[in-house]
Amino acid sequence: LGEQGLVPRRYDEATRLMFGQPRRATLLFSPEQVTLANGSARESLPGVQDAASQFVQLTWLFTTRPELLSVGNTVTMPLALPRRIGRWVFDVIGQERLVTPFGELDTFHLKPRLAALRSGAELSAEVWFAPTLQYLPVRLRIQQDAENYIDLMIDAPPLQAAPEGAASAPG
Image 1 (cartoon, rainbow, N blue to C red):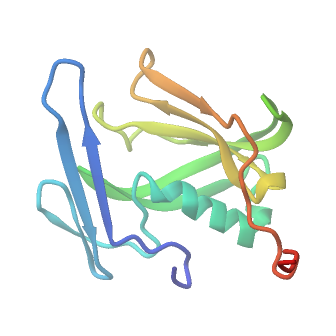
Image 2: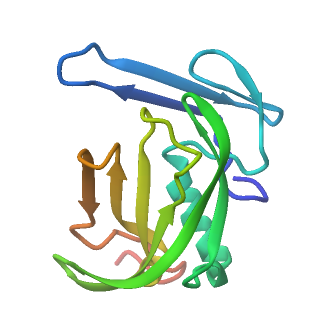
């Protein structure tokens, strides 16, 4: 962790297609540069995240700056993907109540702007964050194209640590 939140050092991705060989991609992060999966180096951007750490970073960001979650607002994040690095803009498109197996949750729905950012080989992720669960992402819709996506929803409340001093003494 740093002053701007999560500071990734390395990202490894393994993807297996139905009839193909597994594909592996590694990104390496330093303060000055990001080395992409093909070995090329790009200048690093302050606060840059990878495909997985972006969700942890957004949780940290909303925990420290909840005012960012206002409908109509945008949140910009530098994002390094296996083939490129750039700034992704997420629109806070609405507040939604999700029905989960353990009850209803009020959430904020964020959707990335994709027009000029995405190639056909990159995935995008819409995310729903729950303020009552410490701004954790509780739904992800990861999309490859109009026909290929996965929609993930939290199915149990997260196990969160009790506040310090709340644990009972051994007896």
